[in-house]
Image (cartoon, rainbow, N blue to C red; front, side, top):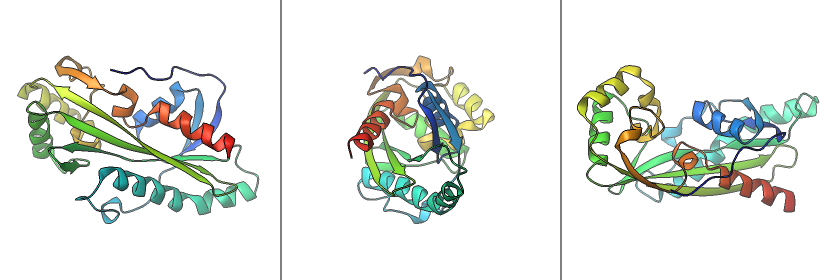
Length: 211
């Protein structure tokens, strides 16, 4: 498993266009103070689930930014924003050639988790950095591959009982204490698997500085 950039301090504020608890946690670990805004879009109507997953997550990240920008620009014009950065993105899980998003029900969670023990799954996550003042955008995709041992049915039942697993792409929660013992290895970074690659965010911020 590759390492990720560590904690940085005093990075300032950033608009985080996501309700994801893990993305907020990752951004905070990087030293940012996230201002959470949620984009009201119909994700199911965007992109092609049979095509390249990287294209799909980029389209979703861009769509979230597009939905949030008008209100943020208005706030900026009124002097109500202390940052010009908006960070959006999305993630899917790919397994056996299929793109998996948030599971519809507990049965889908059980099917997905059982299948991960037979062959590894892959996370594909995008990050889109938008300069609210200029409209400039910088985007990229990061991937990671997860190899699972067989997860006992009793563990899956507990996960389903908590409910959070239904909010995760593919029902994948590698950071959960119940799941960690059944991870054989991860090729990639843990933060990428959890929904947002720190290295990718830093890369986009650097591109923004150099633009």
